[in-house]
Image (cartoon, rainbow, N blue to C red):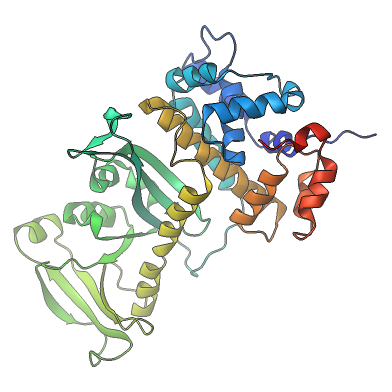
Length: 393
């Protein structure tokens, strides 16, 4: 009888283990390790992400139940105290490095461009992960709150992060944005909300040949230099005004001396009026409005990871443990996305993650798994699983 490795084994084939071991050596992370090395820690936490385990005890119990499967991965039972120590003490940077190594490979996959631009389009935003202040005092924000913020530069074309920055909530979005080397993104589009309203930063984007789109903040001092298209009545759906403007006032003149474009747009569905600012004067105003509308994709991204990855409850309370868990959650996301692109499956990321979760330790090939009829998938997976795997845990 031919042997088929589990879905988990096949998922691990996408991990660049050699590169990971190099990162471990660079940080000397396995020094004095006796029971659980960094690779085994990674396996445990990917398993926790895939199966939705939210506590160390759940992981420990599940490993005991499936010990025969884990034995072939070089891992037997793992005590929750051992995993807890590893999460607290092993530098999270090795998992961050692994994330970017995998991300580099994901960039080679095909893209689905929503706009016919030669230039890539990026969305920039941040989202808060709330933490219990009494358990995570390092995350203090204000007087009574604790939190960590995930800052994300999302590729609209690939629907994958280009940059992820994990920072304490007290660090502003603008501080993170200003710390990024934007020269790497020359000849691209950047879409962001009014949380990044700083003229000198806009100017740096302009100098790096980055076209940006954001919304006008109330109280902005500007003067109209001329109309780029004929103005329409205010009750008109779509573009009402398309104007060339200049910022004035001490901050405007000094920090952004170039002209800008202001587009007033009335949404045909909601009838709400928006005002968009951009440094682009080439695209038609409807395209600029549609570009900003695509910013919703980054909101959907944050919503997806919070609902489908284990990043709202944590296996440890130290800063290192929290960051480690989030980085490994992001690694798992990349693995799922990579499989989706490589196999050409029509399943959504959510559907794909659910299928993989249901058959994680089953001896099925990924191709067979993705070809299952959703109506009969559960029974097929159950037949492929050994009796010991039927235990609910």
